[in-house]
Amino acid sequence: MEILYKLRKGYTVWTETPEGIVLSLGGLLAIIVGVGATCRDLAPRLQSFWQSRPVGLSRWLAVKYVVGLGIVLLVCLIPIWLQLRLARSVNLFTLSVLACHTFTIVLVYSVAFFLGCLVRRAAQAAILSVAVGLFIYFLPILAPPLGWVGVINLIDRLSRGGPLISWDPYGRFVMMMCAGSLSALAGARVAVGRDWRLQVDKKVVFVTLGAVFLLLGCVTAFQVGTNLTCVESIEVNPPNRSAGASRSVSRIVTSGSRGVLVLNNQLPRYIPADVHLALCGFDLSAPGRRFSSEIGLNVDYEYWGVGRCRELEGALVWSEVRPSRVYFLSTGEKREGNAVWRGDPVLKTIATDTGSDLAVIHELDLSSYGDGSQICEYKGRIFFTCAESLGEAPRIVVIDVSRPDEPRVAEVVESPGRFGVRSKGDTHEADYEVNGVVLPRVEGLSGPERLELALRLTLPWAYPPLAFSDGLLVAADGGGLSTFRLLGIEDDFAEFERVGRYRRTLLEKALMRQGHRVVLNGGLAFALDQHGLTVYDVRRPEYPRRVGHYACWEDSFGDVAPLSDGRILLGGSKLHVLAPPKLD
Image (tube, rainbow, N blue to C red; front, side):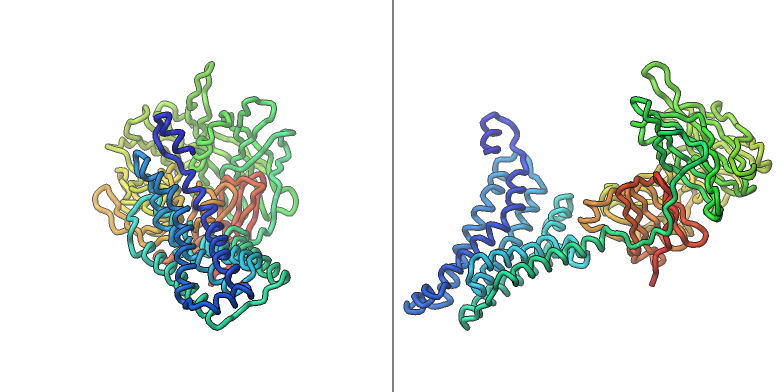
């Protein structure tokens, strides 16, 4: 009806309604027809009637099977055929449903036909067929090793592009569906020929359904549930916190059991809600007061600017020269009427050894060098990337911190072009690949050192999030986790190649958002999304594997920091201290 309405109005015919109907109701129709085609004829009286007629069993079986399957396919394929016939453009999703779901319907019909021949009672056979159908449709989604035989997995993969007809995975899928259908048909022939009959009462039906749902639930929990132990959940409660403020952690830097948090404080009286940033120190080993009084940074921005939180990821660094000093790049926003723009960058030196609280002891104005929001400390110097205007090649301001309490600008390095990661492919799919990294030209640094500097300056901005350590680069894209190995450095370019890939299951894609931060530490990759943390073992880069997951739907996480003792620190509205994953 929708297609006919659009044709009458002259609209472009493109709708996914036929495909949705076939996916949701095609299996149910196959069960009804498959059971109905057998149970009535195989009732005791009618069975005696058929045995008294000169009709061969094989002919009866073939006629019943072929006619019933033809009715099911005709009803399911006509809407999709009309969609392809009348649409002005080819839809990959429609083609994927036609190419994949057809064979699944054949398998479901064959199973229902077999159970009808075996049970011979319509209600019980239909319920058992529904239970088997749930396995056929959903078990491959929930059990990653069976993902290649799942029709929904295959439709999701093929509808995103790539060759539709190929042995892996399409050929193997078709072979498995055909083998299952032929096995069910052979079972039906044997069951009728030898007069096998399975006695099924209500108890068997309920136990079967219960076992199916229990198994599917357990497999689901194994994928998206928590297997990392939360050792402690700590309320972020500085002594001078504002009453009624909504507080969350957006950045964590640690040194041993101590660290500094960047807090987003949202006050409910502001409409639209404005957010101001504050710093707060913490000490997990302290027996009493764990948090210092927070200090405001005079950094404010509107809550809709969610992207501003990502800019804070690289704006806080712990001093390598003097461990009691932390440097924070403060930008904020300037407002004049309805106009909003980024504020002037200021490098603030924060002392962590002034008693129990933090203190800002020095401020370095960087506004004369350009606009920027990214710093890193490397080789005893702080590097600040900035540009005069949008679209210009960035410059690098080198800041001397030999006197940690009074950093000063040492030099300004002009870059001939943009440096950073070069990639190709869809950032949400498995074809995402890092080609290499363009290196900045900084005097006194070797090729590997320039690579390390380039990645420290650009990774917090990378999308999807990337992490680098000891020649290994990992990318937490929407389809999973990829590992890349450094091939070599020539002039101003470092070349990488992909060596391993962990593919997220369809269930993981549906229930877990794409990560916004990834950290490498000790052969483990920690990929953080909004409501959970996934830990991957990348000690063998060719075969990355998932070794732990922590889900907390009532909290929203902003950062993750591995601690020196192996524990994991997550920052949200609370600090979650997790035990390290158990490795083989």
